[in-house]
Image (cartoon, rainbow, N blue to C red; front, side, top):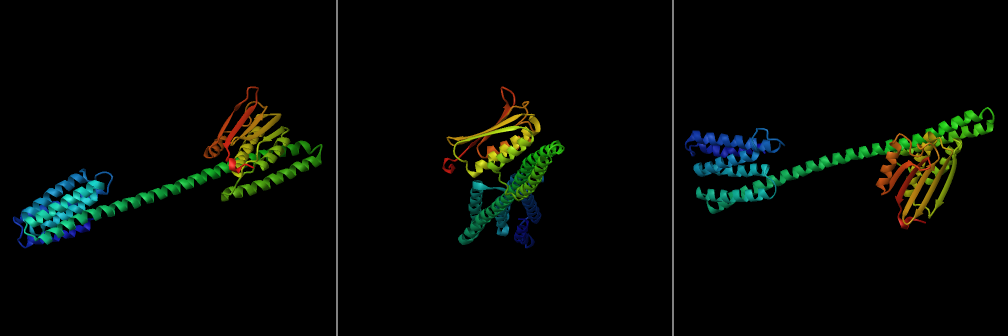
Length: 356
């Protein structure tokens, strides 16, 4: 906006050619107007006024000088009102700008006509004033919208990165927490069985190799974002892990088959719940009940341990599960049972059209 100050060459030429009297007052008015114009434009682009004065106040002061110069010195001094329209387009926005520019345009035409300009010249000056203010305001408004869109895009990119980081950390916790627990349990089983039953010990060692290989595959899938759990697979792994820990498992299922997405979510619940039973409960038995009815699936994992079983981890796993289920409209609750032990309950809405 500052290069438009070159227009001030026209009223300066009037002073140099002795068409504006007294000259000292004309130079003073021209310098004051240029200074106020520059200060108001610069301050308009700052959140806080740079010069300690509101840009609108400086525009009002510029208006006084512009109209006084245009009326008093005439000739090319009418261009100050056009410059004033540029300043208003920079400082003001919205409906206020339209009204202000309309008033400037009409008054510029009247002042030009009063100064001896023809009707056509006065109308041209009024039109130039009106267009100058509106086009300036439109361009700067578009500039601000582009800036807001750029900021929104950057914010969305940051949110996407944070979401991916959260997904990866949550998946990594669930994957490695369960896998390492199974490996530890089966390694202890190998140590116990090796002195008296070498074949059984070798079977447990083979399971460790299988679990480790599967974990590598799942970690690669988690890194690439394609990891999806399977309820059937997790139930099979639960049987293997609990059997190696000498925990008796009972599984009951009722209702129609679950759609893949719901089964994947509940597979994560089984993984986390059984991992915590193995790690913390000291239980002798564990029960997994799955019921699907009236558009909802309910999964319960109950053990007879010391009350810190299916939900007794550090809290990160359960927090991640709650977030997963909440995003799908479900819920997760956990707590000790009245007769001792611990219960983890997950509820999830299921689309009736997807059920078998």
